[in-house]
Image 1 (tube, helix red, strand yellow):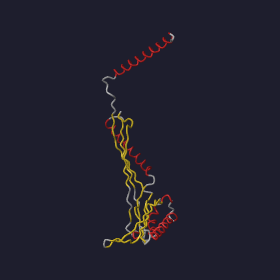
Image 2 (cartoon, rainbow, N blue to C red):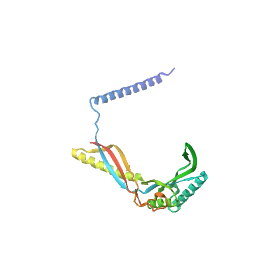
Image 3 (tube, rainbow, N blue to C red):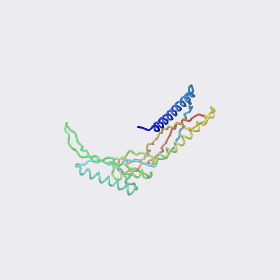
Length: 251
């Protein structure tokens, strides 16, 4: 049997905990009564939009160089194509100091070519084509590379685009301008209506990256790939725009 002393202690502890629980329930009931009929605190705010615009000159050019040839046999077409493309790759690396990581094979295709006559097809030749995507970091070399491609006998040059190597740095500058404009507009509005601004409640942004199209001069472009004069290429400029929407608390 359990000694009477232990039973008494257990009953005492139980009664004490029960008293504390009842006291806590009573306190919560009193606090709840204090808030009956009282509306939750209303938070007032205003949303302001700001625009940040930065114009930057591209420092990277991307261009695609390629060669397509037809021969009577696959081996002959492959050799011709390989010789010219390897020559161009060698020029890019040695003459223009293009790093290997900035030269990427875009595609390599072999297709049979047929002639059709009187409902019959006749094998004419085999076509082999290969393209390279080249990233040019020295903008002064863009026109020279186009000229070199013509001199090397390549017959496919295109997809010339310009970009910024570190666009996030430009976006940070545009974002700072957008936030500064939003804050100035919010402070002006607050002074007009006679209120004070509190903390920022929310923030969102959108961006508009405009990539310019390359501009060619009207002199002879090496489109016939006969090693003609190189075109004058202008990179233009990129306009980075950040639209920031900032919500401020009104005190």
